[in-house]
Amino acid sequence: MQMIQQETVMSSTRPLVVRLMFVFCVIVVGFADQSDIGAEVPAESSTSELNHAVNEMISRDYPSAKVVEIADVDVKSCGVPPNHPGWVKADFNGDGQLDHAVLLMVGEPEKGPQRVAVHFVIFVREKDGSYKRIAIRSFEGRLPVGKLIQEQPPRKVQESAVLGKRVITLRNSGIALVSCEQYAQVYYWNTLTNQIDLIGTAD
Figure 1 (cartoon, rainbow, N blue to C red):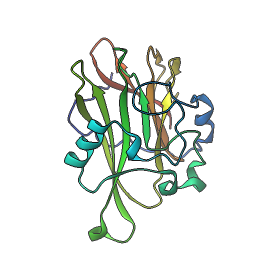
Figure 2 (cartoon, rainbow, N blue to C red; figure 1 turned 120 degrees about the vertical axis):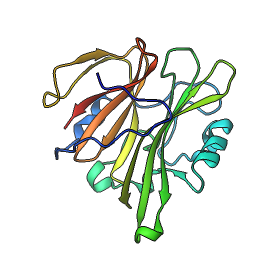
Figure 3 (tube, rainbow, N blue to C red; figure 1 turned 180 degrees about the vertical axis):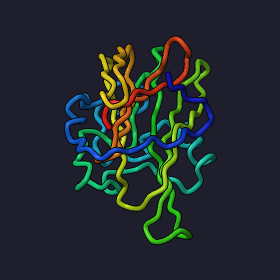
Figure 4 (tube, rainbow, N blue to C red; figure 1 turned 45 degrees about the vertical axis):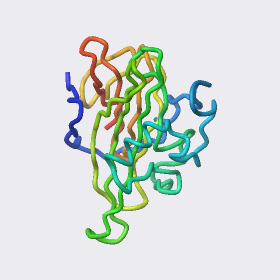
């Protein structure tokens, strides 16, 4: 089982080209009506609606970064997602507190026009109200971005036949990371290891 180390960045996964428009059929639209934002999160939502503490951590750890918005996404390749393409808010570990997952984008003009670095980061809320940052993956590319995230609702998830035959049951919401026309992965809280784990759902 492939595990994710907290506060580290995972290496890239081998992409195999396949159309992923179907992946949105398994993603539930909308978020629970709780805590610091409204019940529905339209695609144009911005970092101003993230938890204040999360915003402060993003500013501190990723200076000049912004959350990926629909205007940043390659919709010709990805299609238009039902929810915000760079932000998921849900209880990932089942402790009754809302966590955040974000796709952050930082411009890299020194590497060329429209060059960007994209960081996939999860912020897990602790009992004292603070947040623990878990850096999942980083990518380099150019605008428009060919990646997005969406909430994966609790349900059985089948691993891609190319990768294996695992079937897992999500007890809490996970995060679907979609690399458009390449692959899809679901990141979820593994209750046995108390860490974020992943399963490849399309290659």
